[in-house]
Length: 124
Image 1 (cartoon, rainbow, N blue to C red):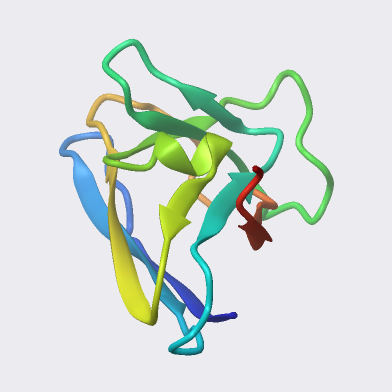
Image 2 (image 1 turned 180 degrees about the vertical axis):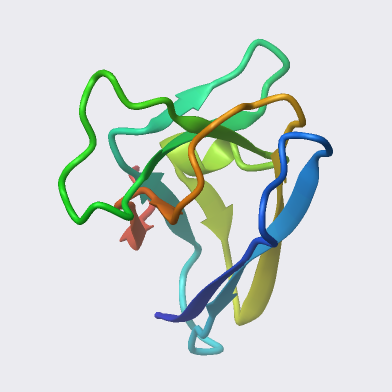
């Protein structure tokens, strides 16, 4: 069971990179089998250097993002395995570093991306 998923990301300034963290706490029974931790959402993709890229949009207006909005791009180190399912076993806290590179000139506001984080059984 995923008992906590906490995102810590400081305010972003295009003048310098910002780094944060996604922490996921998993609680499993001692006798439990390994499972897959999977992250799903429309704004996820793999980068050429094998990182997970998250494309987030300004949500300050309260309206859904449009094609003309400028997204903020985050990369998640060690997160690429979450696309296909990262095998986990036992209770633990996983930490994935997030980075917003400098030079992304985006409007001021709150940015978000609806994602689903789930535990699934391993496929035979």
